Picture 1 (cartoon, rainbow, N blue to C red):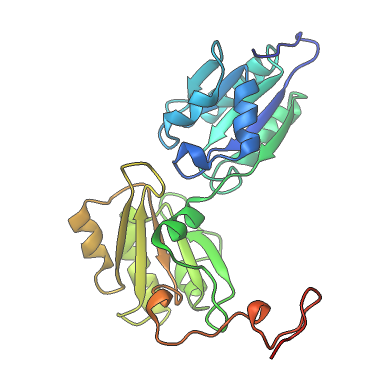
Picture 2 (picture 1 turned 45 degrees about the vertical axis):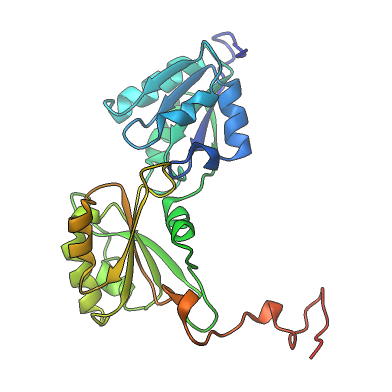
Length: 267
């Protein structure tokens, strides 16, 4: 059953990360909130509708794919005046390309309490699907989450070529239709043509996930051949393919010669 409140005591709006697609990758807390929700607004263009199956019978469920920001916040505010728990269900993590602050500002102005439940990002899900690690000792210890410029401009100093000059792991969101810009930026940053590349389409989505491997020289063609033109994560990283390297520097944390506060060196 869902809990209801009076108009004088508005409920709380929870921005819940639904994860990358597999409904089982939502957090336990997110699932519990859905089970208590009186209303759920979900991103139907991106979130697998199966995630809303955790909502109780009688819950008001609305797809936001055809709504403007103003319509979404107005709906959330109206529902918070009727229900104790209202959920805005978003793909991945609400804090990554999720318009979180844009939606939260009107809620704050209206005196509506809100909070965020983090979710599994498609960047993490993509690397997990491919069995890859974002970091490796003495290879890279840094991960950059970014995108290339499309209709939304990039702030000064955040163009992909500048970021790629660091030669770290780069997870590139919202850019599969701009692969030509990705390739151009990596080349400008000095990445060689045989640099390994990874593209994961619909990471973790049951029955729909596609994993494509290639190099800077051929990844665009591989995506075209596979028909991947939306909802894909692009990863450029010096760690890709490490499972099959002949040698690998070991992590100090698990090295027998390394002492830390939980274990003394044994060799």
